[in-house]
Length: 455
Image (tube, rainbow, N blue to C red; front, side):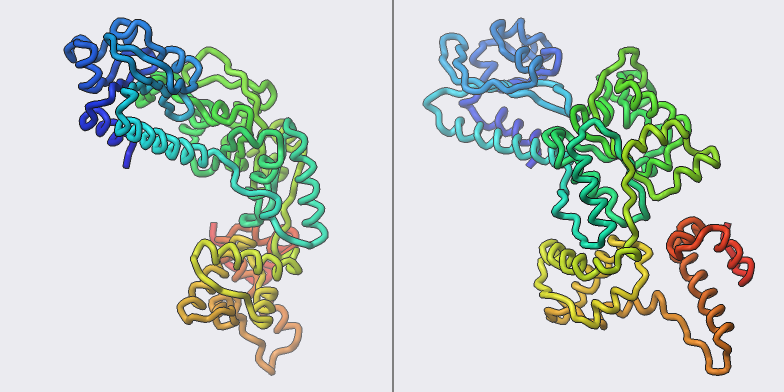
């Protein structure tokens, strides 16, 4: 049930409640028939008028100013004693109005209805709050590989320094966002908002408004009253800028100013707004190479790179595959409502041989598919047959007996390069990283084997 429907029910179906809604300027937008009868005023003398003119002793302005509800105070309307409450109405973190209601003390039906309404409003408030909450802790990030444990321990220390900017790099699927969530949740900023922005998913002409907000009339289609940006909403907390390498140079310049001054200015506005936000940025791109190519600002890089966490690929921490697999099976069982108990040694060995170009995210997706197949068979243990699709991805043909070792090795190397290029959508940099060779070596091998590379 939507909030609007609840209010409509209160206004039209309950004769024991006096209720009204005002906007953020105190103008009456709606009032119940019961309240109008108590005031002995017609609708045309109420709707659209300042609430002070209709009920001079109203407390809605206190609620509009403070943003805090006033519940259970005595209220008198034409010699009728009532119990009243006024609660703020929020939209995108901003007070846009207030809902005031009064009930007769001896009418318990009305009291129950109000309690139901408050419960519904709290549900929506909790739902909105969950969108701005970090969901992961360091306990959710598992692994015993030596280098990974050092990175995790370092991140736990960084959480204790709430003003330090953090840059997290690594391939897609290595857990960069999980680390960002955990840093926020283990810092003194945890009681404030955590907001994630995917810089690659938002068009450049909208990204500035999304980050810094805008004033009413700033551009065609701008909302009435304007809109706060993510930096304002995250004030006191953390903003996570994912895919920072996809941000345009002009936006990089504006972000640099915000990081240096801790001040933002809305689009169309002329009043600076001071913010207190920790910035965590993440990228799977090589920012230093982008600096050389004039695609990323060097000064912004140094501002972001106060603390650098480089998440290792799953290929470099294969000893963690067993513990990650067990952890992910437990997690997926809860999400899929399945009861897979574990995985066979043969299947685990198969997972250890696969190169995992998509890293932990690909491992999780593979396990989800395998768990669904096992559940369809009513099988409690994952076996190699549940991962047959992995063999199809890297099913290289063995050399024929007539081939020399050198030619067989070269043919295998060529196949590996072609398949990795396909897996990375012909991204040369990622291919070199997956194969753990430098770019010059990769280019040399591509020319040697006459491999056609898509532009």
